Image (tube, rainbow, N blue to C red; front, side):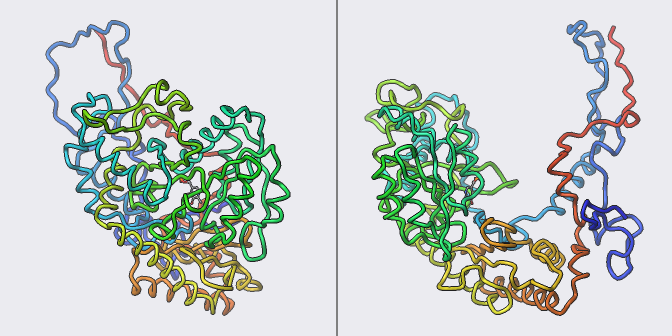
Length: 526
Ligand SMILES: *Cc1c(COP(=O)(O)O)cnc(C)c1O
């Protein structure tokens, strides 16, 4: 049996389920299969093409001397391969996806329908502005909603993910400092519970990063922040609600202290879903905040599609925003693309074109179909669902911050597993056998063995109950001394414990032919 570096089985061999293993490695109707390139159909083709009558080529010695190296599959073979692959993966369309900090919510089909309208889907980014007025109008309306919901006067739509939005925010802040003769500021302050992208972005922009300590109740330690706020600080990056799922009660004071030393307040807005329609970050003193359209505004997430991370900006930062942006004038909409005239202070451009148009259409469809009252209810229901989970599981598992309600996510630590021989990782793997994708594990780092659960508003009470029932049954098994069951889990997944250390240290990201796999016959060039 193949094992990973900590001695857990990686493949479903031998005694998988009560001594049963299939003869072929299949699981139910899910076949065990090789990569599409390893199927060895090199000489075959799935299509009937007539042999070209002329075999000479105008390409001279540029003509290909070996086969192109595509596997020769028929249409059903190719189709089935990809559908089977999709079944080996989890998706929000299959079940609850309780990843904390990630806001994995349902992607409404209405959004998909709107994004596929030919007037949006078939546009080319270089089409003349006069021919794409509808698309520009949509971008303008999306910008209007984002500005209204956040209470901020400007927005840069082009960043393509949350982390890209952080980069946009910090480059804007850097440009603003430089314009004011404050380019010497070298430091960005980040709380210990921050998402890893925050310090990484600050370092990428060339800043030094210092940590702000956390209080016992999971919030920014104001005294520590005050001590570290010197005139060398360019910005602070604070997430609100934070990654412990808690609202930063002192947020207005945090903004005031930051501005008092001439620094800017970057807010990581990945958790905006918890407060959308209820709190406007602009009212809290935020200068820049990214919004993950693939979180709060329900566009597909991760493998489901590209992200989008628009950044809202305060009056002080707006002049330095990246191009392009849309303005409406007497002759309709136009794009500001060059860093001159009205964009003379812009720090430049982050992407080749205008951002993820397909995500803009989906996010706008989501906003328009919910309306402002619907969006407020989203935040309320997301918080209600997280508190329901916190309340149902707190008897069996230890809440990291038991006092008071949480916001949109419920955070547990691993004190309740002490002495059971079961770790957070083992517990998460056992959830897979019960039909539930694990929650976010071991993050935030400030909580030992963290299990961060974010149900979002799109789950029903029945679904939350099924999830809680499964976790409570597992918790009981862990406490009853059944550690072995957890060590071997998952039993029913196509693969079991992959060697994550090896995968991280020596990733194999590209398939390379084994010398024996391909025996290319040279194509005779005349
Ligand atoms: C998701 C997330 C990010 C990064 O967003 P991406 O779109 O994945 O780049 C940053 N901060 C927090 C708190 C997040 O949850």
